[in-house]
Length: 368
Figure 1 (cartoon, rainbow, N blue to C red):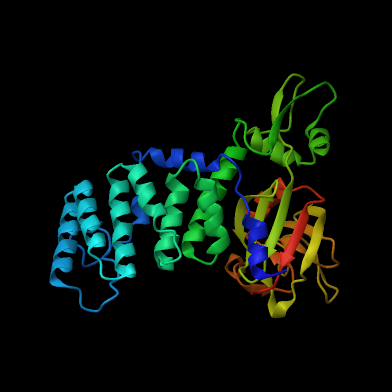
Figure 2: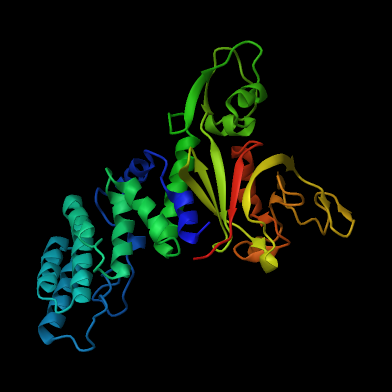
């Protein structure tokens, strides 16, 4: 499977409705306001939180252009974002090169967003998605659109994850959407891939989980239960969608999908010396606090020095390989195992609770 195809498989769609959840979470800051962490401070700017000066295509900007930039910075420092946007508009119209123009349009959009004019910001960001715009500004525009455009946020986020998967902006979008997906799933409200079930006499969580091909732990998370006690008449939120896993070996990433839509991405450790097998497998068994049977014949009990498996183990349908935790979280993110997929204990425990035995796992190794 080619590299582009692999990424498309893991990010072809996003769980519906999560974009609105992210946008609503951001709305608490003030509608349309650009989060502070998305602004890169520029030491030479007039104020500490002023936008950085865009890179100039020519080494020596003209004096008028430089003067206008200083004027825009001054308006920004004073909190007069609409006036700053108008100055950036003038800079864009007078720009000598496409690179200068796209940089100025980007900061015009930033100022419009800060001023609370989300519609104008969206129009400006969308104007930066063309092939003649430098990648830096296309990616920044996509990342902002994914967070502020309710109607098309999912589309923009999917495009960012597919076309620019290696960019840090894509990592940020994946993190935000993943957290929002998990928050929506683990809430009592309806969410994609779930339904509601009314408990009847003779039910228990294991029986209900088997009926819906989910896990008892997932039912407890979805309903914020402290114990597995249930009573006839209880209304439970259960996952009736299908989880699947794609491991992108070159990027050391595990993507969890729900009904073929992006759900969450985790960093993983993979096999040293190309020892992680490629192909499509399934989870065949799951263990809490696993014992490790070392290749040299030694048996390491859970908690014993030398046990490399961490707190959870999920066997794959290929002998000797699985997804497991680790006591060495610093080894996650690179080639560190004998071929297995290694996760932090916190992440593997979360994944373990979500996916049932039989979950499909696709491991992709191809570049290009």
